[in-house]
Figure 1 (cartoon, one colour):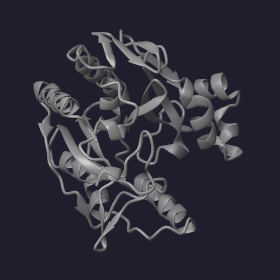
Figure 2 (cartoon, helix red, strand yellow; figure 1 turned 90 degrees about the vertical axis):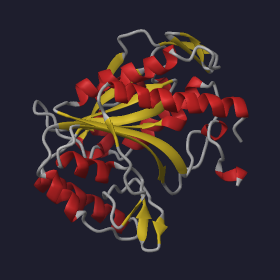
Figure 3 (cartoon, one colour; figure 1 turned 180 degrees about the vertical axis):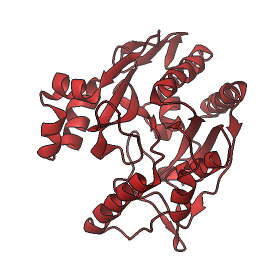
Figure 4 (cartoon, rainbow, N blue to C red; figure 1 turned 45 degrees about the vertical axis):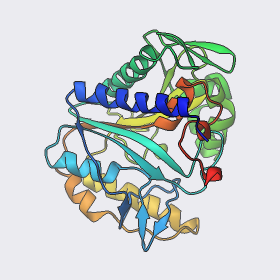
Length: 306
């Protein structure tokens, strides 16, 4: 359970996050946590609630608000996912999600870097921060000085797994190699944005014009910990419908409860201009900034405390 001192530090960090986005003219929104339909993603398992679902992300509702003319949105909310429990996972967790119309994933990477550096720079009293531009984790010092590293997924697989991405996909070992061979090396000296994922691993992201085998998706890693997942949003309803159909089929084959096609979301998607969006796990980020070992140490009550 969190200590009173840590609880106060968490409160200050939450206020700093809000101040960051309000200063940049983002609108804070508060969308429903219980929904009749979710975005079909076969690798994310939701909790049911009286025939509806607890949100795994506020993405569905936030994109519908964007489509109605809101250019910049952010939200801090609780999300829920089954089979997620461990050092860096809790079934209920705090998500920061934000969207900016007119942007691609490149501008979003830069803003994500600004956010983390600002939080760390204003929090030198925190156990995980040893200066305005340095973090301490697992006995190592991690520089936050710009620019942070940008590393393609292809380059990371060749460097750390000794295998091209396409071969890993064909051999059905992409996810295993990502977890065991690639992720542990990421963000050890300074944070790294791992970007340009294979299109098969980016159901909601836009494909690159120069190479449609990859999608404009990135993840932020610090000390081997994945903190954020962002992308240039796919805003083509027909293509998105096809991808959702494939995800629904994968869920059915895996024996998961059936999910419906999110028709209202797809209707609104056709009104959405070029947009970039990102989800950042605040509990994990606070764990790093507070020098905690697990996310359970930085939340008011973890599952075992109840």
